[in-house]
Amino acid sequence: MARRPMLWSMSYARLPFDPETYLTDVRMFQQEGFGAVYLIDDEQKAIIETGTSWDASKILEAVKTFGLQPSDIDALVVSHIHLDHAGGAGFLLSDMPRAKVYVHERGFKHLVDPSKLVASAHQALNDDEADLFGTMRPIPPDRLVAVKDQDRLDLGTHSLVFYDSPGHAPHELTILDERNRCVYTGDAAGLYFPGDEILMPIAPAPSFDLEKNLETFRHLLALKPRALLFSHYGPHTKPKAAIEAMMALYPSWARVVKQRLASAGEDGVLQELYDMSCRAAKRFPRDFLERRIRVSIRGLAAYHERLEHVGPGR
Ligand SMILES: [Zn+2]
Image (cartoon, rainbow, N blue to C red; front, side):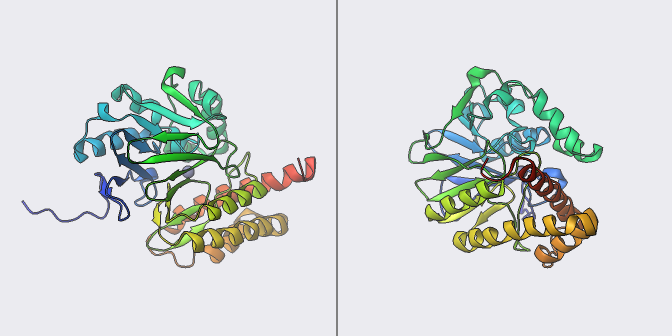
């Protein structure tokens, strides 16, 4: 039976750079092209990013459709511990008896006991958003691996190098695959909306730090990657141009929030940032993009407030 190609696919599709690296769209927040979960099909099998708790069943389905069993998976790598990246991990493990979860050392204790993390995420979100972000299931310490800067994970032909990449969050990692020179950026390099080709900062409260994020961008540039593999969403094949654009956008957004929030209010700033970054939107709905921007307005406001109270050079 001939099957028509689907716009988004529950199964894993191969990336152009590499015969062993695959991408599936979990339709995070019910949006096509927002939640990327990668699979490296090497001697050891690794999944990069685990989505929200809602996405775990979709990942299991994609793994089976691909032709593997969940019990074949050796490693689950989470770029950071926010619910849309690490939320799925605790729900996948019962079906993946071999798998260990690789997480930044600063995130380790929050995956063992996610109660604070879930509470603070839900506090920052309104009810229907909180529902979309799902929840977390505690992960036993013996199923977790705490990762430090420049730690490695060898999968066979692929070798992953983890880099401490603060800015978006203090527990953020970017991950270089030495075989194909692609970098998994988590949320460290902002958001990429393919098709519309929109690049957008993502600067959430409570701990976004502009200076650290800019330092992370400089490090990403120095790696000279062949492509950036965004968690939101997918491969960007002009990494230098993308990083340089973000290095201009982050400070611009920070400036708009600092100078205009008091006078224009959140809705006024939202309008300005949307016009600045999202005019090309066709594929992604305005409402969806605006929700992402609001997260950054609040995070940038919190960042400026912190600087005022503590002063620079903390
Ligand atoms: Zn995210």
